Amino acid sequence: MTNNRKKIIVVDDNTTNLIACKNILKPFYEIYPVSSAMNLFALLEQIVPDLILLDVEMPVMNGYEAARLLNNNDKYKELPVIFLTAKCDEESELEGLNLGAVDYIFKPFVGPLLLRRIETHLSLIEYKTELKTQNILMQEMLLSKTGKVWQLQNAVLEIVADLVERRDNNTGGHVSRTQNLLRRMFEKLSEQGIYEDETAFWNLDFVLPSAQLHDVGKIGISDVILNKPGKLTPEEFEIMKSHVEIGVNAINNMEKITDDHSFLRHAKLFAGMHHEKWDGTGYPAGLKKFEIPLEGRLMAIADVYDALISVRPYKPAFSHERASDIISEGRGTSFDPQLVDIFNIVKSRFYNCD
Image (cartoon, rainbow, N blue to C red):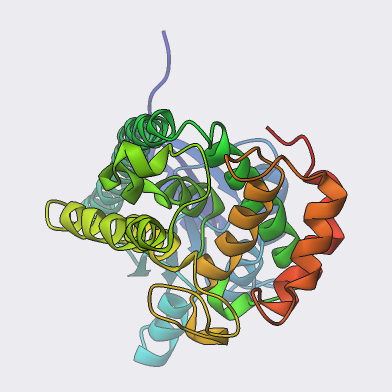
């Protein structure tokens, strides 16, 4: 039969006190009496008690010194301690409580009172342990549910991005490729500590999927223009440019029906800013330099690079080398100079990154 009784170590250099305490407690608990703090630590190598009753005034190592050692040891710092002492001044009691003791019992102790105090603290300890376990279980459940919601959200995003690409016959695989390019550039940014202030609270697994919506506004562009087999007229190009505003408006509508706007905030910046240029000649707002959020500056490079290496109605696919040269030529005009430098560090890994 399993012995489920609580284990209590009693530490006291006075044999009479030790025997008295043991006799009071042994009908209810497993009692381990020891006569010194040194013997306490030797015993702790063999058992894990539910409670330590620790005398304060002992030779060689007193109770306060023993408590400090317990607190400084990761194995023992969570063990509850009740001090036993004949010292009844407030200063001594405060010192003991500051060392983490759960209580302070004065000698000579009365049996029933000692039992009740111990019972109360063991019940509290058990309650805290159960509460901690429940909190862990709830956190695990929350993480599990969050993970499922996140999987669902990513699945919806992938479907939306796929629908956009299916309407545009010229951009197959564009979303997945640009995501890969962004990931590689961001990893190098983090490695080199560039733009740390802007990315300090970014979670890459959270931010990157939002980039899938950067071209969501193309859903609102006519198939005639979207799939025109040739170069667009100036009027048609103006209509094509409106996909940025359409995309931002669509994400704004999403924000109205959800409380979690952080994900959509990144998505809106990817969608609304990836055609802005470093020198202010981009669209839709003509922003320049650091007026353009980092999401837009990153996506501008990934978007243009992928367009360059892809077949379009008005041009063949450029080689990786030629596309890389064009990105470098845009350093300080179309693109953020520091991001172009990052691009040039990782560009050999960009090619064939489907």
